[in-house]
Length: 304
Image 1 (cartoon, rainbow, N blue to C red):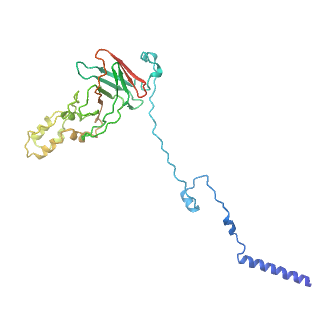
Image 2: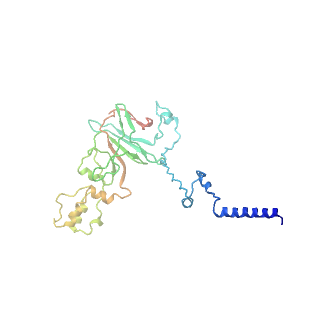
Image 3: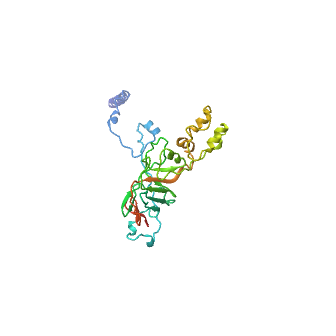
């Protein structure tokens, strides 16, 4: 081997040894890659379990409020003969003839007037009639709110009147005995004992069930079963004062007791609403009475 070859070999060995020493000390460092920004915003939601492994925050939940659908009154063809004189098709309410006048009574010699409205809404559902108004030749009056379920405390608030199919709303021209309008129920006649309404509340309360008194004394049973519907026991009933069980039961024969016993009955609420407007708008002889909805569109007409 010549001296030139020997020198070249030594140089090559030194280069190889230097390279090995360089890599063994980690001088070739890839850490500069960490300084590069590869961040990005994902265009999709990442499941929470996968996000925990990849350090991606899960997408926040999305909440949406969807308002309940507004009942749309069903429409039926209206013939030209049905449209009252002086009105056109565009003047008619979507509820035209879904609420109709039943009876209109002006009252005579100072007595109260009465207007009844009947609902025919089996297809479109209950209709909110509060805020509708009745117009007659002498004036007009709005349909008010009423207490839907009259609580024994008497503190239940009034709310809008929703008339379902077959419901009847009576509007009386005098004042309410309790300054409230009511939806009648099967116990409401008891309220007439302490508040005298005009007209009187119907006395159609449930009678005492014999099974409810069968464990009491004979005298107690006779007296309890003799009480008519909606009648209150006498202050001093004909049972011994020592008949504590009987007297305790008699204390529940009132509106509260009836309400507690029958509130859950499917037929507890009546189809009748009674409202007192304390206004006399009807002519005693002849009148044309018009019913308008909240938008001023005609619902029904009645002439007498």
